[in-house]
Length: 117
Image (cartoon, rainbow, N blue to C red; front, side, top):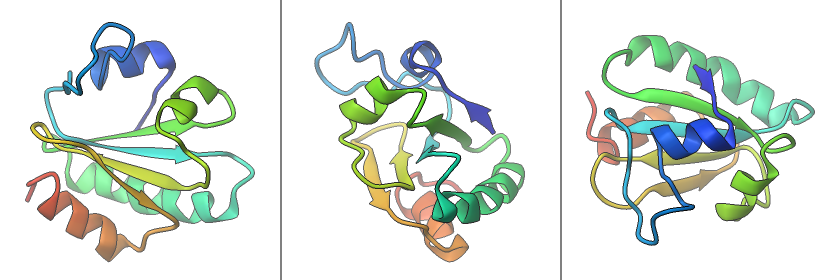
């Protein structure tokens, strides 16, 4: 799992500075975990996403964004509670899920939203 900064987000997900309409910049669909180190539920989601990043390697990317360090990105997505998990398909609009999702819910999102098996 890769931690994104504002700069890497713009190159790997969406260049919000130069584009008005959503246009995914990545090669593979992705999940973005908006988290903070002090957040208990975020620490519960971390290992689930870690194992899914291995299980779906080469099919999807899983990124993490520290909302404390990357406040601009958290603001752009209107993150008001964490963990917030953004499912980003190759085509279409991203979909946000809020809360410590169980593994089954994340897998369902991977299959239904990201269209990855």
